Image (cartoon, rainbow, N blue to C red):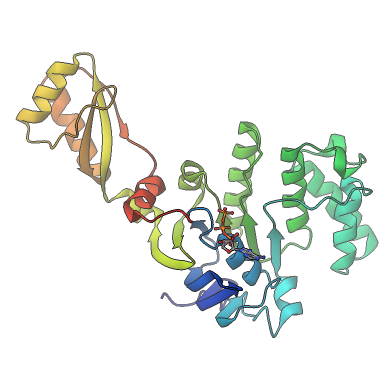
Length: 310
Ligand SMILES: Nc1ncnc2c1ncn2[C@@H]1O[C@H](COP(=O)(O)OP(=O)(O)OP(=O)(O)O)[C@@H](O)[C@H]1O
C-alpha cells in the first residue's frame, strides 16, 4: 500500500468485510484513493462495489476492517467523515414534492450552511449541471439523466474533500457524459479525492488515474491507468491492402491473432511498440490507414482478470 490513502484527504480501506446473511458482499477489500486523483472502482455485477461505497460513505457499518475517509473513520467519527464526503448513489431517490432547487437547499440546510449561502450554492450547482431550466420544477418530472445530474449536484453542495460516485454516468446522454468527465477531472485537479464506479470502462479510461478491480467482494488488482496502457495488449491495424499488410506483419515477426474483422490484430507492448510498428510499416511502403488499441486500457486489464460474474 502506498503512503497516505486516508491521511490527508484520501480514502483508505484495509481488510474491509461486510456480509448480508450468507452473502459476503465485501470480503476483503484493500484500497487507497489519493487526493488529486480519480480512482476507478471496477468489477462485475455483484462484486461489491456499491456495498463498499456505502461503507465508505458511512451508510453501512463494516463487519471487519478499517476505513479512513479524509482522515476520519466513518463509523466512530461519522459526523466528521460525512462532512467531508460527497455521496452520489447509483439511483437518485425521489423526493417527489421538492423542486430541484429545493433538493439542493434542503441538503445545504442539513449541512448547516446559512440560508443565503445554501441558496447561492444551489443556483451555482444547478448551472454547473445544466439544470437551470428545471430549477423550479418538481424533481420527479426530471428524466433519468437529469436526476443523475441533480444527484451529482447534491453530492457537491457542501464542497466535500472526497467524492464517492456510484455509476455516475448511467443514464447520461453523450454530452452529459463529456460534461461529467470534465467536471470530475476538474474536481481532482482541485485536490479532491474522487472514487468512481462504473461499468463503462472506456469512459473510465479517460477519467481515471488509478483503478481498483473487485471480484467477489475482494480486491483482485490495483493499477494505474498509465501503467495498464504500457502493458502488452492487442492493437488493430488496417491498411488499404489487407493481404499485403498481413504478409508484411508476418514477415516482420509480429504475432497475429486469427482474423476477426477488419485489418489485423497484433499484440504490442504499449505505445512505443505501436509507434515502432507504424514507422516500419510506412517505411516499407505498407499503406497503413489506422492503428489503435483494440478496446480500452481498463477493458483489457479487466478481461485479463478472467473472473466470473456473480
Ligand atoms: N441489502 C442487501 N441484502 C442482501 N444482499 C445484498 C444487499 N446488498 C447487496 N447484496 C449482495 O451483495 C453482493 C454485492 O452487491 P453490490 O451491490 O455491492 O455489488 P455491485 O458490484 O455494486 O454490483 P452492480 O455492478 O450490479 O451494481 C451481491 O451478491 C448482492 O446481491
